[in-house]
Image (cartoon, rainbow, N blue to C red; front, side, top):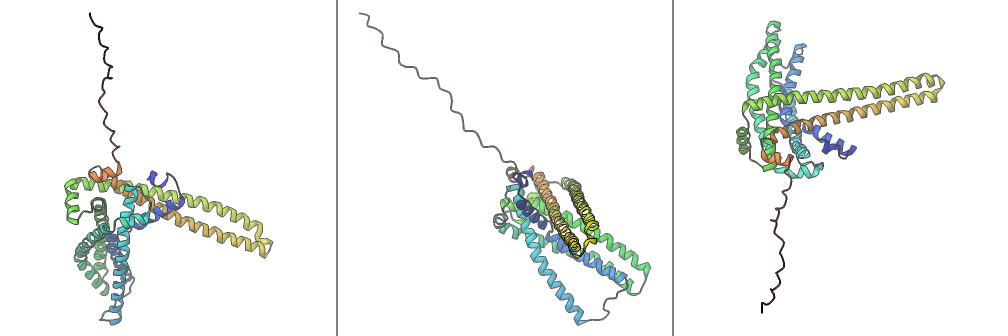
Length: 341
């Protein structure tokens, strides 16, 4: 990461790489699974506040739901594919040590479609399992709300909340496994889905994968918290400086007329805009750095077991040319002896 972002350091390159890494962290699996779960929680909260769903068939309600589902499907497809392909770009940032987004984007077109197809299969499987498990609790929860039975509402509500957390954890685990163990093979060897699947589980045992995921979660969580704390401290220091200057200007100029008040108001507006820009830039930088760190951590872990990736991360030094065997210097011929007679 240091060689990629700091040698040499350019603000434009740093923000570009950070922004791409931030977008790549969305993930089509997370977007496809967690968004419906969040919508389900919103519906549950609305029902808990006494709002009722339509009891009978409603053409308008059904049409609205179909339109929302279609919009969600289109958004998921577009954002999911863009996020999937950007993961290959970030992988190329870390492994290939390149910062040209367009070049990396063109390089992994075929592999990104294959990886996106794998994500589609996983999403369908996970959604089938989650809907099958959650459907009885959702139906029971709606029935309990309609008959206004608090004793029956709480168990279903608790089950849905626990199920949401469990599903979120499952999504993160599956997403990490696909990204850390399948994507490198598809990026470096253009591996098919079944080839990447067999190769990943031949190299790693379930215990090693579980330990790796726990370590990755702890390390990346600590790194993300450190970045967040640094961002909060920086914004707080800059905000305190701006507040001190504004406080001084207010007491010095506010009572001096309309022109002086206009200066104070203009300063407040400019200071607020600067703080907003710094906050957005800080969010992009912190999220991007965290995403790059996650990718680098996974790449170096798997690179120690997957030779093509390890060779990319730590290329062997060029072999020295073979040394020619030393030869004794050629001695000149001896002069002819003088004649005896």
